[in-house]
Structure formats: C-alpha cells, structure tokens
Image (cartoon, rainbow, N blue to C red):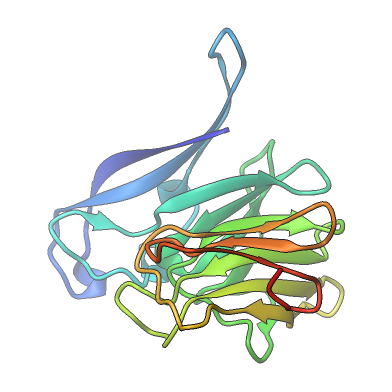
Length: 208
C-alpha cells in the first residue's frame, strides 16, 4: 500500500478563489510484489470534495494530504487525511467511502474530547471499534498541545467517544508528523512528531 500525489486544475471560484488553480490530490494504490502491478487505485479528487478541506488555498492547494493507510478488520482501508481533519474507511474493491470520522462531514457524532486536527497515523483496532490517532492540533495551531487519542466507535449509534488521551509534559505542539502505536501489551507508544520526544504509556495513562 503506497501513497502518492497528483495535480489537477480545478475551478475554485465556489471556494472564493480563482477559476483555474492547481489542486494536489492524494493517490492510494495497492501494488503487487514483485511485479508492481497496480491492484487498486484510489484518487481523492474523485471521491472527496474540495470544500471538505481546512487547508488554506495557495499556489498549490494540497487539499487532502493522505499520510497513513491501514487495513480494517474486514480487509478494507483506513486512510488518514491531514488537511480535511478526517479519517476515511474506503471499500478496497469499489473505492466507495464507507464512513468518515471527523472533519466537516463526519458520519459519527464526535463526543467530548474526540476532536482532532492536522492529524497523522489513524489505525484500526478491536474489530474497528477503536481508532488510534495522533492529533497534532497544528499547523497552524488550533489546539494548545498535541495528543495521542484512542477513540471508541459505536457503529450502530454512529457515536465516537474518547477512551483515552495522552499528552506530554511539558506540553508539546507538533507542527508536523507524529504517531500513536498500540503495543501488544496494551501500552501505547507515542512519537511526538516535530517535538523530539517518544513516550511509552501504560493502559492507565502512566508513563512507563
């Protein structure tokens, strides 16, 4: 599974900009090894509207910015898109978006503490009932500090609730990169992106 980018020109007048602007879309591909044959090809510009973006329009409008791909329990794809502030579950065969978590068109009601922005590294756990994600909160800053989040999903009621949030002391605001990794012993290892730190937390939130 690999990410790439493509550039197409789009009319951005509905977003208050110019008629013929270069827009950067994300490409998700599954490649067969070692032949490199493309088994699956998904392009954000064909599935996600430009208006979902939180990114400022500039000379090259990078509206989506996929930064992680993972498998869900049923073999579909979970894609994290930094600039729409959302994670997308994508049908691995048809390319259809099954659901959005976060962003402007979330299919889940986002409970207290589940808001994230400019995030990285969305991963599925517990049969897609739990999502781990690194909430940068910048850049530009919209939060006071970055957090590592475990978000529980109730698929029947379409509700997202916060299971646990991990923060660094002293506070760190990661302007780029970062990850949240759930380990086999249920500890959580956090890389704080542009902040030069790693922290391993126990299930109770204590620093190990």
